[in-house]
Length: 202
Image (cartoon, rainbow, N blue to C red):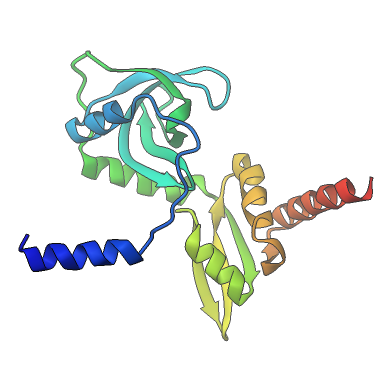
């Protein structure tokens, strides 16, 4: 770069700070995961997120959210798409067997079908203006923002196995969200608030 541009960038770096959440846990195989994505290879190992399960993953994407590395992948053992915390994937190695793998475009199609059919329980939540801002800062692929008559809504779908995750996410928005539907999600959020209140009453 010319010296004038170098000087300008140095000045900018001295007055602008970008704050991000540092990694919560180290990921031992991040370089291997990236290599497997680029080379369209399958990684075999174990997933400790829910017990200790063998996996054979062809990973379609790697992303970083709130201090945690995640990957979205097709598991050749279960024949299902899923999202995995990378720090819970252990003993990863490249599968040596000469099996045909999906292209990245094919993996995106699989992911799209999964998002459409797996998240089969629609939800709708009303947001305050600050709630809308909180969602814009932190949201997930199964949800989106809508506006109607000047009111912001968080809409999307979830699977029954994700009720706890949805409850935790919505409670994190505090008084800036009201669950309108479905009833099971509304009840779950109310039960979580009651447990929080009980901690202060004891």
